[in-house]
Amino acid sequence: MQSKKWLQNLDWYLIGAVCILAVFGIICIASALHFNLGEGTSEVYKQIVFFVIGLGLMVVAANVDYEYFSQYYIPIYFINIVLLLAVFVLGNESKGATRWIAIGPLTIQPSEFAKVMMIFFLAKFISLHQSKMTRLDFFLKLCVISGIPILLVLKQPALSASLVLVAIFCILVFVAGIDIIWVRNVAIVAVPLIAFILFDVSRENPLIMDKIFEPHQFNRILS
Image 1 (tube, rainbow, N blue to C red):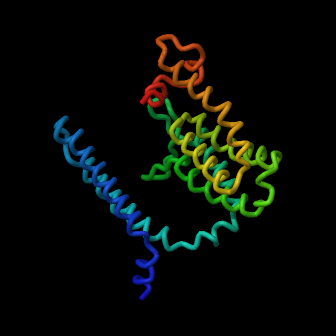
Image 2 (image 1 turned 90 degrees about the vertical axis):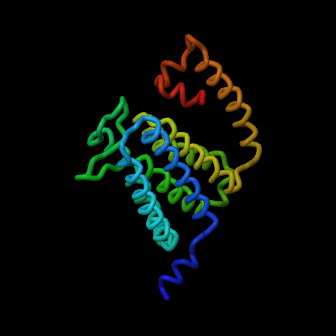
Image 3 (image 1 turned 180 degrees about the vertical axis):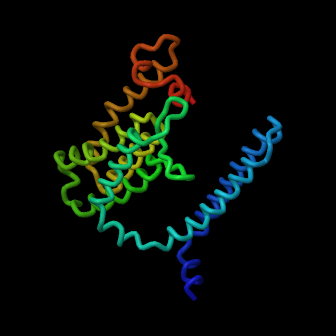
């Protein structure tokens, strides 16, 4: 009966989409490594194992009472900060970036946990102060609170993860009912800024972006 209840809580359309994406990704890895480069199939099998483990964790997560964990939103925020700071002390450097912490045979990437923790914290924090969403001082407080983990992730450097955190912040404050005038004002500043960034990174001799971003981040932005 318990297993039946667990299955009823699952979003089968979401699971189906995840499975399709995962299988497509595994096929691409097999094509790139095994068929094109002639390497063994160990990496392909490893991805399949991770996929199966991920599905199991997805089922467990779907049946976890998130309301229970949301009441600990403040400790969750500080745990997130501690983990991101620990990267700079205990982290392993690879290819010019320090993003991972080795715990025995396992390696964790705190920036991945930061995405979930930020959702937990912001969702609960905003819901407790819903009436303040139209106030500028509260919005600025949200920006500062969210900006700390974002800057720590960007410092690793992990540009893509930091952009995901920015997207999480923007989506949550928008859904929470931010004043549309602020959205307009931010767009007035953000759109020209993004256009300048794209223009500058595409130049042979960038004006200032080469002092902010790493060369491999240029390629990601252009892509």
